[in-house]
Length: 278
Image 1 (cartoon, one colour):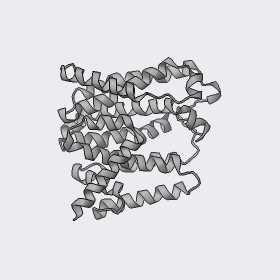
Image 2: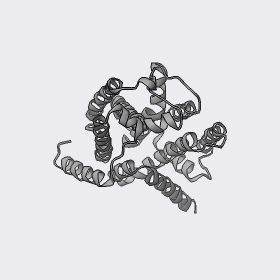
Image 3: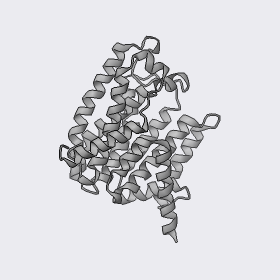
Image 4: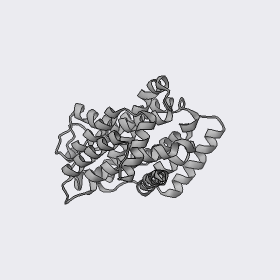
């Protein structure tokens, strides 16, 4: 029965999410059960593309990414894929009528990671839109469950949250991105002169985006509100820890949040949510 294969496909996407991100896994668990598997499917697909460009050194990554693009299109056209992650993703795309342009923009940003790019302001915005904001928009189409007006109303906030998350990732991963992958995403940034002034400027941008994003989180459907709020709180905790470090320290070490702290944040956030402060 195909139902068994579909269940397997979603399970693979779920396991992929759990393997790569404790924070997002816990956030997804806080969503309404009926939409969890679709968010796992989106994250699993995003993670697959990300692994191609970040981890598959020694292989023809350009060719692999192109194959993913072709297989994605085939899965969407044929309404099935033998790749479990693609199978769950195409089911989710069709179920929630996710905009194909969002998928193409995401893959475009992944392709940018395969090139040596000196990021100016325009390219920086282009990359963040494709690598993070469109992922938030895909999830938002699941959260709003076909309510197009609500989707349009919440769209700017979802983009701000995705942008803030990505910029925090950039700061967290600055050491590996620069020293191992040879990347710097921040526009016109000379890593030789990356200092606390530049770091603070980036942090001010993130702080502003977080404030705007929270307004949108409060307007989300109840099925998604707490899960997104929890992911927001995890990233806020990571952001607070990054802000306490000097530019030199984040260039030398990847900042992490212990699972015990995440558990504490989850409990505190849940109590706040249940007390109707959100």
